[in-house]
Image 1 (cartoon, rainbow, N blue to C red):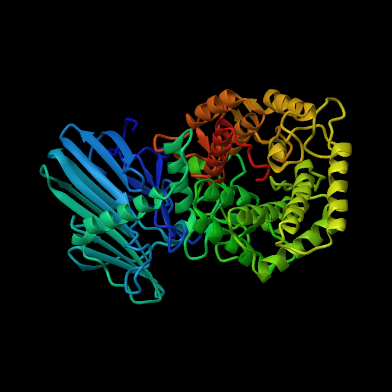
Image 2: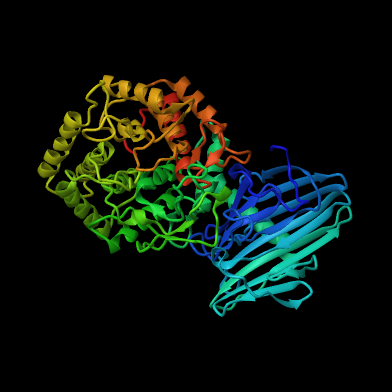
Length: 617
């Protein structure tokens, strides 16, 4: 827990640091809760839908749901053990106020048909003294583009409806309309007194509202579900508590209805303050897939790994045999990028975007991600059905036909296509994985052809992926810049970690892209933008993974330990970090960052145990 001042008089600080936020969720929807007590981000009914509260991206027009003290407070917070149930304690001059926030998961993890589709619960208790409680509600649907009508149904219930969606706000703190589409309350609680507030969402169906008196039972059921889930984790090694927290975060980002894992629950948090790299990450990137699947399997979660792999195969059926860069949670790729002009962006860092234009790019490395995911899945005990085998055969054919093409690369460069070294390496990895599946008896293909193409790719990389000035690999053919993705080449098995060229490549990455334990993706200007971006959190963990594979376990351990200092007080990590200030940047929390920690720690644990690390993603 970390202490900080949480001003509420005046009204609030205009923009909270990204690190000030906590994530709560029910594996369908997710909310970001600021340290001072405001829910500044909530999309409903699911994480990829329209925002109801978006003060995260516009302090004036975004809307929020504030529940907290009526004056300056010293605040501590924590997640209740092995759960995403958030407990925030505000110490004021008048007393101590405690707020417990969560999104219920009923017993068994399934919503009942008659229950509200989504529900958010905020429980308040006066722990000591007589603290003042403030509630401030400003729903702003469609990313602040709509000023809704709020209707009072009784003393404890306000509703909002557009004919399709129905939103109910229940509160045993009487709320009064203070302005258009704004509700407020201010009251003083006696020691031991409790109040509850719930927000329930229904869409095109009957939804029964749960009484406020049932909040404690919902909290206990939610705690039981999450703690039972965490109890099945098989990982016992370095950074065990941090690993479990990262996995809870990944599970919150897993859309239970399909098994898809979102890159992040947010959009448009900038990679540089005032810069233009503001992207919508509420989708599923194939680039991340083998890292995320491997994270599930590293911790013993076969069921989650199987669900994710089945989603990968199902989602790609609409574009097969071609793979797109990203998909929504239902496998759709039509996610046109648009600017939401109603919002100014976090700290004025616009534009705010929804949808993502990267879906039209060519990204050859994704074929390797899918093939490696299949191999990981099979090695963990899974079996391939007819559709999965056919799809992998199709992907192998595409690689054999397409690996010589330039592409946009794993970082989705929006300028000219290049022959990215990592993309070629992942084409090699795709064919190598398919060949292993053939050798294991899971696929029947022309292995002579696959071996010929695989060997040709490796020879091509070693001939053209070298720096013209130094004994290192380079980010793209004919270009002498570095790409932190090269750190992954020993993991996929293309080159040994102690190979002199790989050692020299790592040392050059440290010199040119490293900032302490953190690593940038590539040098400034390589992606067509003028602004400088921060260090990329996952890349730091890739460096630790590389060190562990090279046998430098002490350095790998120390690096992971230092990288964890960049997490916030709740163990959540963003996409990037400002190397000068240490401030979090980019969408938050980032699945790729948490998967990077899990995979690096698992590699370190295997090295410490004396087992060879796996040579696949």
